[in-house]
Image 1 (tube, rainbow, N blue to C red):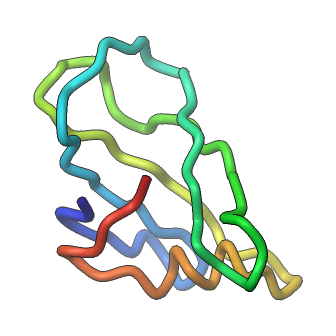
Image 2: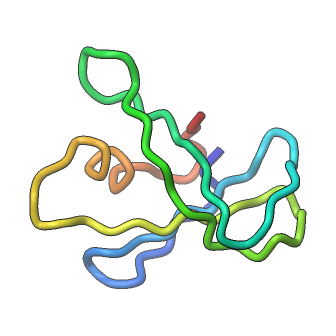
Length: 86
């Protein structure tokens, strides 16, 4: 679940996610995120974890909005605290 959103500048955001269950990871690993955009099956995007591996049940994903329209990025920029991701 989206716990917090931080804007770093007009094109870059961080999403802090509260996990259902913590999982072990190392700094620099990535996670696949399923984004329910469009009529097809969810788009899958990979994002690097921007959180130290401290195991507090939260992870941070950082992403930027490019110059070309992209439904996945638009979806992420529209998220609010309380929204859920898989």
